Length: 485
Ligand SMILES: *Cc1c(COP(=O)(O)O)cnc(C)c1O
Image (cartoon, rainbow, N blue to C red):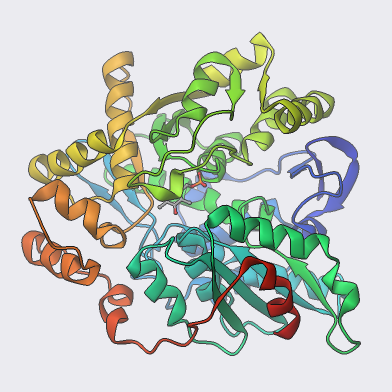
């Protein structure tokens, strides 16, 4: 199946090559030339793993043995066989995406990506090892490390800002086991770490390594179509659950509210709709970094604004890379996308044509919620629905409420839950009670005692686990570090 760049239809690659390349050569993202057909009715009858094999297999048909890859990716790694369970809270349905090995929604995609990459490598006869380089502000690093641990033919190196991630997130990363992993702190902030990684790519490391050590550099971030495709599955899974519970009949439309950062998660929902799932509105929920709210409401994307640090850090983002895919999918116009992305780069903003703005507005609705609102929502959802949610999920919930109040839409609403509340214990605990506790591990214990919701196993034992990666380097030492490993 052919993919091409969002910026130029002549930059083509089959689906296996698109997974290997990550980014198209002109800096655009790969999009399918024609969307595949999926038998929706059959899909909705299947187990989550069979659904995943069917959907990912349809999106990436040049990567063979999909049922086998899916089994290898997920078996034994998630808390439940259904991977992403739903909970009917009595108000909204919550789709729990955080039941994987690192308690983050990114596990759904990052367990699958290594399988896709290694199989694509075989199909394309690629000999060299792949070195995954990732700068992380917290969640992606651990999920990628866990996904790539001991995968043959791939090494992974994660850089995080020293002092810039939470104590739990640091503990998750520095205790990572595996013979092919490296983790290192960098003096500076997330941007310094990310710039350092970009510089390593630009330095052409691949050509400078001695023969026998040749490798190809790649990344694990969400611009890779191999990360996006696995995320389509859970929209089908949630719909199937509502059917099973008799809350909808086949064909009824369901709305989804998605806490959004890089626009990957919500774009997967749009793709699910394009594949035939009866999706109503997709609600794009942001925190105080509301660049997407403004865009969807006005048609102008403007990143020239300060970045706020919030209690939902995985959504602290000013440039949502996957929005570029939506602009193409809704306009079909690569020249327009190239022009808009050029403007974003040079001027920091762009405005889409009125027609495109209106088309986006029919599929999406956007809102935002600040830290105080998220905290208030955590408390209210706990008191009224007896459901404990994290800060990102609370943002999705609050914006779903705004949407329902403003539109009067009565279709069922599914709120995507992207993290375990125990990944952000300080913010969640202080939403429920006044606390002077500053140690994150004690906060977790207190939260468990207060709510009775169990701490996930992968987070519980963390404090006792051996620290394996304690290095801290300056940002100009990153290239040397990578050459050494
Ligand atoms: C990455 C992440 C998001 C945002 O997802 P996108 O696909 O980048 O929009 C939301 N919540 C959590 C907890 C995340 O880790």
